[in-house]
Length: 73
Image (tube, rainbow, N blue to C red; front, side, top):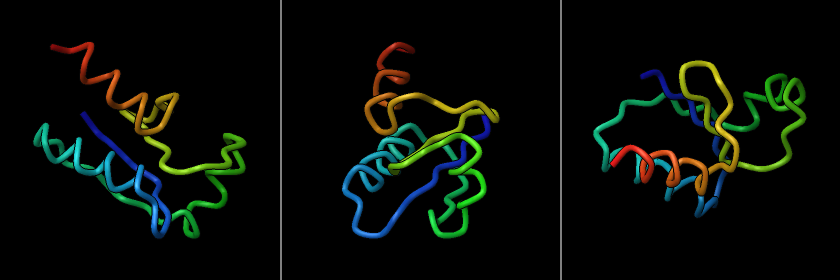
């Protein structure tokens, strides 16, 4: 599974999402929100974290990621 996470500074939900990914031994590519402005505009995104799994936007940020993992157990 390929994961990309768009994060911002001082973002508790970003830290929680990265922690959840690490807890599940999932490698991920972290992209700073300032470097992802084109992607943020393309998807009309306004908040972080934004998480893409295998190129697909996961709705809900950290909450969506938690639900994703909860559904796999």
